[in-house]
Length: 295
Image (cartoon, rainbow, N blue to C red):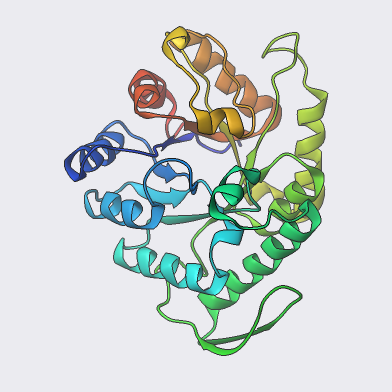
């Protein structure tokens, strides 16, 4: 039985509190499941404060990070922030964690951009710290990159045993970590040169890595992908942040073609959680959301 579709919208900026609350309420009214925010020094709003306001302005909309850069904050303090937000939103938080999208933000902040192995080791330890913080009264941790003793782990999140974790990426080790630990896996992939409907052996391999790592829990893992520009793609101008991040598939499609394609991607690969990239896409995708969300 395929997992039902749900949709998220990825927003990073607004000119005012009123506009931000309007975006959040509009996303909820259109049937989107989640509002996600980036964690970038070079773009947008600061995510924790903005997600808190979005949660306060809505009643059903989930809020989450897409994704927090692990190296920007101590994981125990970020776990406390996310537990607090989950408590104050009545259990509507998704926790997205990543090992860093690239060196750009690090350079702006004057933070060393470590090699991939080191950043992934830190992320692996952070996931363990998060899960301990959400489950235990006090946390003691001794790792290669983080160590602390008898830390008070309060407050506790509403969602038990913890809010859903989202981890995304493209390489084998990161997808293997996601398969082991995440509830949601966001797979970054390239569209084949032959076109979006063509066989994609690399994507098949990426799904196989997740499946192998997840083992018996694979059937409970939600696979996520970025949405595509539909109907009026020529009006979209990639932002500086998009140019500096992983590739986002951009293919011109009608609404009907998009629906058919998403059904095929779910049947072929298992993708059921679709993220669109801005407020303009949020509106143009509304008919797709209305047709597919929950089905």
